[in-house]
Image 1 (cartoon, rainbow, N blue to C red):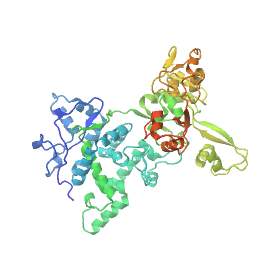
Image 2 (cartoon, one colour):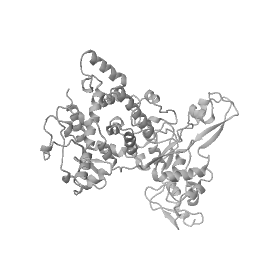
Image 3 (spheres, rainbow, N blue to C red):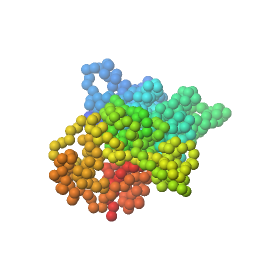
Image 4 (tube, one colour):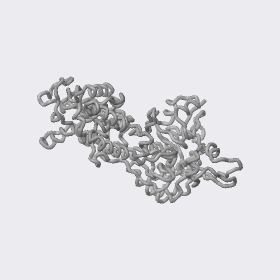
Length: 539
């Protein structure tokens, strides 16, 4: 198969005809038309295509600014130029050297499923800046930043049927060979930052092995180094070509490489067609902070002043409620929360994890205690510095527990008050949609227990928009107004246990996943974690 037999067929428009954007960047990539055919509408005619004819929109905008500074860019061009997607487009190096019917089929599929790129670009938003930055620091082509689109749909928690995991879909042996840690507490395959470094190491290794051929590199990444090497050896024995297009490879790999090239064609020019990319500014908003030692993630969220759910979404490598005892203790935080977290953490000292003490009874086994305490043998061994499973009646074991916001950590209220500056409003606080006791307490440097006590609220109370809350101990006059109507009759709080899924919880309580996500303001793709509380309305 000749890689460059014809030109891609997709829509092109003059820059002046692009629609202006407000919240979204209108995008869809195409090959620019040849100079003599700039006005052509509809599919490109089949003709031989040279690399010299390929100039993506990023290059066009830059050239226009340099050669015709008097011309004003459209709003769409300005937003694109200020986004990280501009760097992706500008840094591509090899996609334009390959074009054939297989690539065109994938282009057509993307264009007929336009929401796919839009949705994934939104999912990529928290991490795409960091990924592109590391790729460019290594002088690698930015086509590689699109690989998680194809591998995992940019879902850090993704798992394949053969247990490949994370954005970059690493199998466990490959991850281990690249130094990614993996145990009960943490799986580096799900850590977007750590797994990106490992993936780029692996891609560079494959690139050197396959004579700096990026298509063979991508094929080996998908099918395995041995599979591609054997295919090359077979073709050499039979006197056939050894480029990607000449090899007999698994069907998935034969689709995988053209799919990435097709996506690169589209993303190289995200101003010529009607796809919407999430507008991601070309600047970091993520800070990676080292907590120094094991810390409960719910506590870390309170120290940072963010909701626990956001912290878990930014740190999908942590599988439990705390960082791994032996590390890593790196926590991804929004940039504006990192300084607050560091200040509060410095004042906290060593009180970072909540524990319960269990006295070993005659007949107890480590595995039995782990089952009864909803943990694992490995976690108990790590927490208690045990090298085996031998335990002795009368001794104590430390059982790690998930931290309840505002509870259990001495001095938390004073620490937060010293570092958070939002004053407590005079009078009563009116609950707004989306408020929780946790978010209100954190906003005003209070504890959840104080709010419950001052307002006579139980642990199962669900706040209602418009409800009044007392925020100061000396202002209890409205407390009587809060007790009669705040608690939904059939509402309960469910604490997520290890191994729980939204579907399993819904099944056991006779409700739907849609109900649970609506009651808790989360998406059906949201990660849930042990110790997290979910609101359930059950009959």
